[in-house]
Structures are given as C-alpha cells and as structure tokens.
Image (cartoon, rainbow, N blue to C red; front, side, top):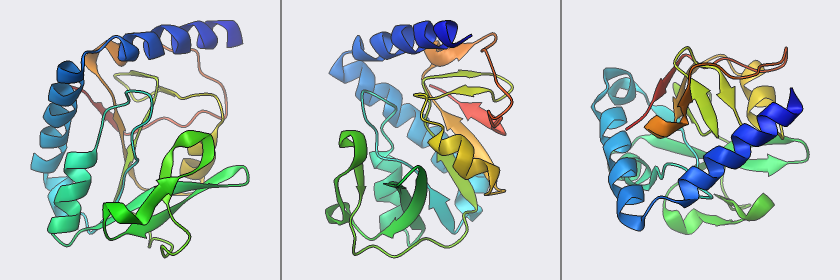
Length: 177
C-alpha cells in the first residue's frame, strides 16, 4: 500500500513540476476564480487556505481577494506534529517555516473557527479521498475541525481511486481547473 502511495506521490509531483509557468498561473487563476464565484465562499467569513509549495495550485489571487474584501483569511503553521491556523492581514505576515513552506509569522493571532477549509493535496478522487505528502498534518487537523472542506488540485491530480487508510479524512468535494 505504502509503495503505491509513494509511486502516486512521485508521479503527481513530477507532473506538477512539468507545468510551465504560464500553465501554472493560468490553472491556478482558473481555480481561484471558480472558488471565488461560489456562494459558500462568498458567505464565508473565515477561510482557511494555504500558501502553495512545489507547484501546488497557488491561492495567492484568492488570498489577496480575501485581504481586500474584509474576509478573515488564515494559513497553517506547523506546531510540533500538528498544524494550527493563524490570521494574516497581508503577505508581509508570512515567513518561511517548516519544510520551506511560507507560514504566518509569530505575531499573527490564532484564527477563529473556519467556515471553509481549502485543502492542498498530491492526488484526489472525485468523492473526496485525498493523498497528501504523508505527514498526516491535514488528516489530524480535519479530524478535530468539523467544517466544509474543499480539496484543491489540477485536473491531472484526479484519480479513479486512491489507496486509503483508516486515518485518512475524506473531503466534501474537490475543485480542479
């Protein structure tokens, strides 16, 4: 099972690396626009997002929209074996953290409960199964944070099925380009 997960991770990460800068930007913008048009996003006061790493779908357009439109936007910060979300008020509030991921700095306040969580991943299924990097950070967090969850990925990251384990948390839906 783990060998299969490792192979999927390797293949998907390579496919993301193979995107040109133009494809990366176009696909990311397309996905951000899809999310921003949704009524659940428009009605959300507190949105948990992420700062892209390794050619993940960039949510910078959406983050900027939230900052400009008085939505509370929170990003994850790794704390020991877990992630916690902190509000940012501008991109100057992020700094390089765990695994070279941009995280809210130490001056950011802990975020209130989310209305919507946008979740990165390496691969997804249409029914919301998700394969991450293998650290279990999001699975542990989502297990104790009941909220609407949306997986964010490219079309090529959608698979018919994924190997799943008991601790894997299923997302409510997945949005791709």
